[in-house]
Image (cartoon, rainbow, N blue to C red; front, side, top):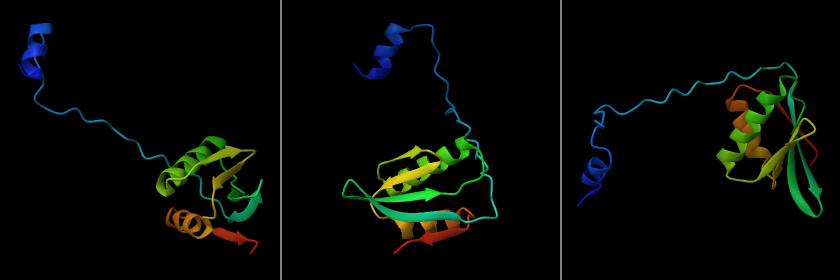
Length: 110
């Protein structure tokens, strides 16, 4: 007995739809600023971190940007005090991602 037959026994009145459901994903437009985002490297508690600061738009937009960067790089990080803190030294990769999105970036330190 396969899964379809089991479902028919459990729900005899249900008729499955033949068309797959489409889920609409809306692209969120981020605020583009004139001033560059600052991308700097620090060691915190002996571990390397990359810090992105200087965003002038809404806090929720900056949080979405942080989530996107963390997903693309497959690294951990957080959003705290209007800064994105990424675990590890990923300045070059982060700057490339931000430039592809249309942001100006500035490398600070080393």
